[in-house]
Length: 299
Image (cartoon, rainbow, N blue to C red):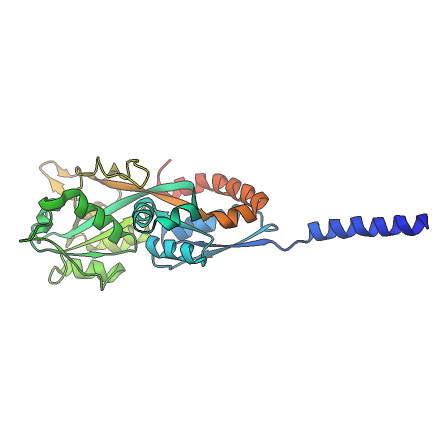
């Protein structure tokens, strides 16, 4: 009888150990962005750092940008996502029900607002867009940033008599081509970290037609949903994109623009359900930062 009891106990312990040792990894969908952009790169760096035996991280690209990522988080298609902080803030204002659902995990890098304008369109400052110019958005989060620009400059940029209009029918390389021609569109906005292929290759190759527009004021009082400053001023070094930098009396120069954080957010219900895994996921994010900073030049 004792031998039988000991056998049953041993089997029970072995079963418990087996179920623990061979438990299937937790799954998570991480929504990022264009497969040639920083969000997708960062997602895959994080994936390379997680413990594969406990977390299967599915990095999803070409999602449509920050606003789409927030929609996917809301409906549960994404468990976590990388988004622009201004998109998060605007979405939180318009759909406050998202606030208790999500947690900000980390700031991954500083996004830079690249405002590209046609060299022959007479646009030397933001308020020149008021003269019935047409703006397009080269990537998903740019629409949100444009809305912030319009709000920040108010009647200096848009009033009943004269204001810029928006063409949302084009994006990406097509938006560059249209702005370079200057016939239908005179400006396009691309929000991304330094060194993305789109800016280094596609945009810089249009240097004879396009130039970066400085943004050096107007954003000191723009706050997020929690009352914190949403944008900061950053310098785009001349060496970043030589062909599309403006010229001055002493040659081409650095460009001041606004920057906004790219943040990693996670659904709280996923986090609560997978606490031990989540702790190791955070360690993976921390160990990814050196590679991310090296890629973005933000060391």
